[in-house]
Every structure is written in structure tokens, then in C-alpha cells.
Image (cartoon, rainbow, N blue to C red; front, top):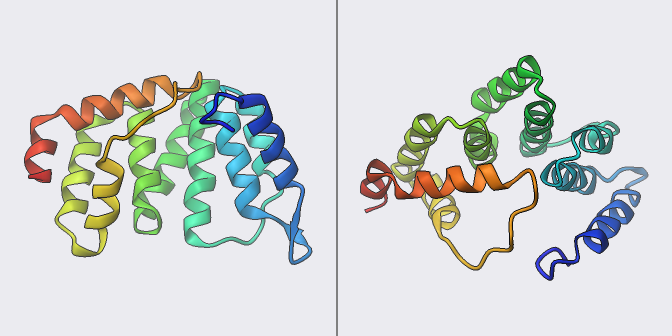
Length: 167
């Protein structure tokens, strides 16, 4: 639905999915997906509300949670919370390097992002995932709060040091 430009319908489906339970508990993945979508729409308060009920989750889930916290904090101008979330993402990057990379782009930390990409490319276990992330395919128009991060991604991909690391 999102790729068809039907954002309101996409949001409604994410809201519906987030209300489904998983083993009698909050459906963590769907709540996190909803929070990320709200962040992309520039609705940080709704993003925080969407992820509030999540409980136990994997390390990767915590990375997504902190990615949403980082995004919401940046949108609200809360530098302290953004820094705290980015610190978590940095310290736990092995649980979800792409989540950390995208947070660096949101924060405009292109040098750190380029260094991370180079490091991931040099690691056999991470190389496939980062090469997939580096590929540029068909893209929908960015949602309101994603335009700056997408521009930072394009700038990152055009950097000579990143191009050399990929080569």
C-alpha cells in the first residue's frame, strides 16, 4: 500500500496489525513497524505511543526500538534522548548494523556512516547485508520525515571512500 502511494491505508493496516497479539502478548514486530512508520510520517508522539507497550524482544528488536526512539527524539528536537538512543545503537550495532547506519544518516553523521559501511564490507558475516542495503532500486517518494535521511544516504553512496570500499 505504501508503494502504491496509499499511505493512509498502509497506516490503517499497520495499526490493525499492531493490535493483533502474539502468544497473548503485544505483537512486538508490528508495534515497532507502526512506530517506524509514524516516525517516517513526522509523527513522533504517535511513534512513541506505538512502541510503548512492547516488552520482551530480541537484540534486533531493541535496535529497531532505539531507532524509533532516536527518530522521534530528533523530530522533537530532544538532543539528550537522541544522543542516548544513538549511544545504544552504537554499543549494540552487532544486533542490527543497518539500524545504526540509518540512525547515523538521520543524525547527519556521514563520516561515521562511511566508516561503518567500510567496516561492514570488510567483514564476511556482514558483507552481504550491507551490499544489499547499498543497492539502489525503485523508490517511492520519501515520506515527510525521511527526505533528509534519504538525501544523506545518497550523499554517502556518492562518497569516494565508500565507492572505494565497495569496489
